[in-house]
View 1 (tube, helix red, strand yellow):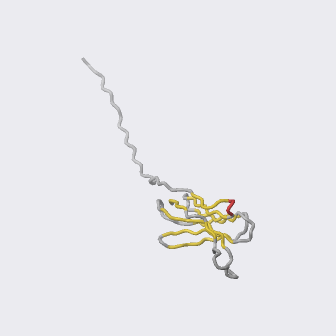
View 2: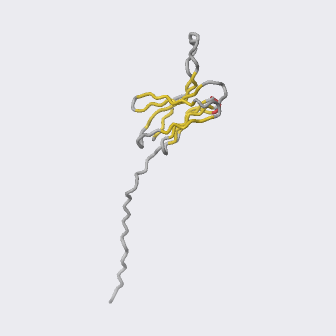
View 3: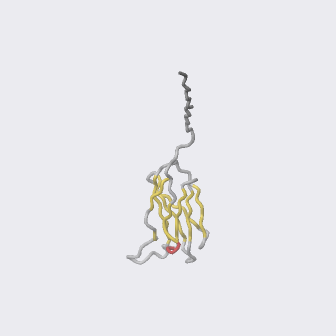
Length: 124
């Protein structure tokens, strides 16, 4: 008795491309607060947005490798400034958005200095 053999080809797929990572896009602040800092993980873009015409300067602040950085937007109300960063992939860092209150003359005792949003964590 003859039988037919069924041959099933074995296909092996090897992926040599870039590994997937879990980068995050995050925002600190809101339009209602007058300032936002937005991080887009694809390309590491850090936008600092001035959402108010109150005359105050705005800046985004972030901590990278235990160093604190401030990135300003001096373009005025209704604008966002793109700070193109260069971070390694899949690293966590903290950032926030701040309103830069002038210190001349110095604020009265008990008044806060700059106002900042809570810190937000993002993954590059």
